[in-house]
Image (cartoon, rainbow, N blue to C red; front, side, top):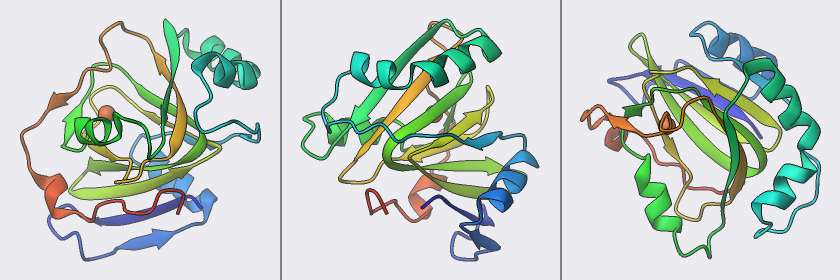
Length: 184
Ligand SMILES: [Fe+2]
């Protein structure tokens, strides 16, 4: 279930809003410049389905997004608890950072949390299968896939190295609750 939890960025325990109402989530995120949409993600894919299989299953969705933005490349990030890179992958974007490019993810399976920091608040957005979220370039955020990561997401890029994380050096992520439940 997709949820949004908003807290002050200096008081992670003070919940200003918690909701699973997708329309409300969409409105709250739109208000800070983050588009989010609900797409269909009902293809049955094996946990270790390869990139070509995932992209083929969602070819129409991918084509629609490419037409909208003119992306240069598309790939699939797929993680499952037994994946040998699970811990490394989780650690990679667990600290606050920005990117030069959009960070656009279409979740086709599983779940993960984007923590988006804007105007003194943190918007913890638990994305699940079917969610399309678009973080514009330079959005301050971090991402937690949890200790037993289980998700597949299609990624879209407009720049060759735009996905590289620029870390802010702020340790805010450590003061926020981690994402613990894959698929929760
Ligand atoms: Fe990121």
